[in-house]
Length: 109
Image 1 (cartoon, helix red, strand yellow):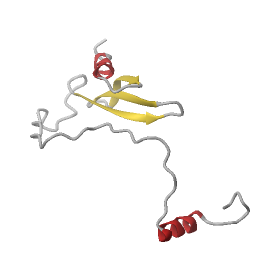
Image 2: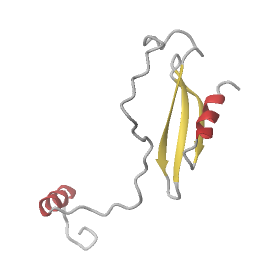
Image 3: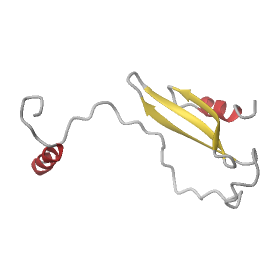
């Protein structure tokens, strides 16, 4: 509406769309990074929540996705819990085990 010369606040448009029961178009497909499984038992706490024992003793890993103009990129990273720094990382356009393993091997080298 602003492009057509009608000065309208964003909150007004949101309210009117909500009242009319309409929503904007969503482009692209939703990326699923976690596939829920059965009700698995929670893993035991092997470090007893002591993350600041010493450097290079405890590391945690995770991966996420980043949407770019051309594709979705998956990024895996490994964090040293003592220094809270990223010590290994890897990126790929597909969700495969090898890119996570690359991130885990980086601190070793």
